[in-house]
Length: 406
Image (cartoon, rainbow, N blue to C red):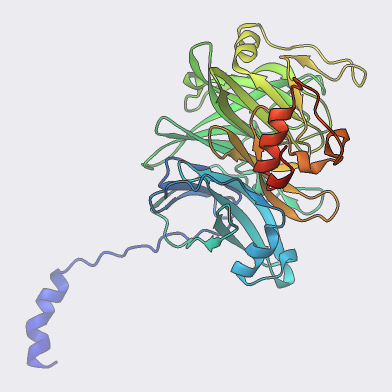
């Protein structure tokens, strides 16, 4: 042993080496939700974690509507893959920017896949997010173990997180756990500071005429109902429930109040809340039928009642409870608020199957260019006082057909 090493040896032995474990990597991106404009939450069912991705400050909104009738092509080009390799998972709009973020699964050879998240503006410019730049993460400690599959090849783990909403410095996460009462609501403080609280949920399903404890919430939003911050949530096939946030306590098992049965044979694809004038609404888009528009006033009245406890007369009378207004948005896969006037919808074209990213006006809830009807013939003339004329002029311009606005 040389003299220099002998002199250094006591110092080396005195040093305490600290091993820093590498930060976990995002293995999948199934659900998105914004906290504020600079924090995007990403649910990773493969890794059983929730990640927070920091984003640059929101740019001033361009104030332009989305009319991207084939958004799949530019996304695939930006990612360097074929359009058929993309599976669309979720959509979220960055508050204050009118910039859309889309979560995807990129399918590869031999069943391999990897996550991707891209931002898209109204002009169709696509940017890929760096998923290695997470500012923090939190574990889902009670995630399903992976020994159950649905329909042969759908792992139960894919339902670990079915929706997320951020409210008042807390992230509310719906999904499944490994408990016998599998339907679970987890609540994380943000910034993340450790383990989430977890509440198991049961609800009465009027179509099935049974108390259900396994099927998870599929879509949810937070609204003020009866003066209380309340989770408004929808399940598959399609019961609607309300849960006051104050009831979500760690280890509790609660019965959600079933306030409506909105129809059988469909799954919720998204639930957003917003104001039109002074009135607040929730809009639920569905996989197999038109969307449901619900007012906060009606939800408050229904939540003050005992809740539904008897089956519907299926199939002759498919609805029960809170009144919902039909809105013609049956092709929508995901939905979010773009700004106070417009919704942003991720949807498939009926004819060609292209994935579209398009604006839809609140209050109208449709795109005129989806149809051809009496108003669209070139020799049609609006009668004096026609109640649709102003809306048609606005909608045609919004959808990129300004020359037809008359």
